[in-house]
Image (cartoon, rainbow, N blue to C red; front, side, top):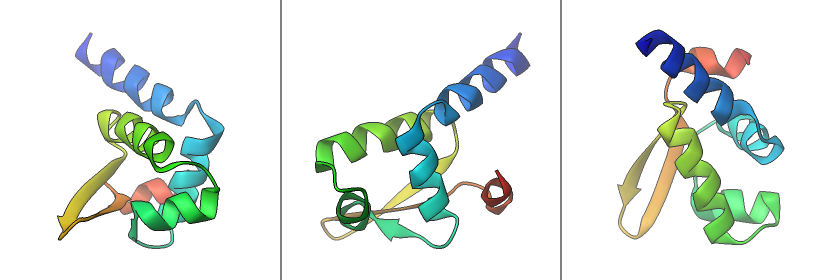
Length: 81
């Protein structure tokens, strides 16, 4: 059952066009939330909400540098998705 839950979380993370776009952007390099907000043209809380869903699905990881949060793919193989 655990494997099915992991698969469901993965598919849930991929089941949104903005999340797919974020993954596409992160497939090129690590970026800060401010960059994603500018590129996507949506408010920062919305980007953070989508990043949270991607984090919960295990697709991205974040790191803090001062007041900025940077995100990257959790596994480089995800870039092929």
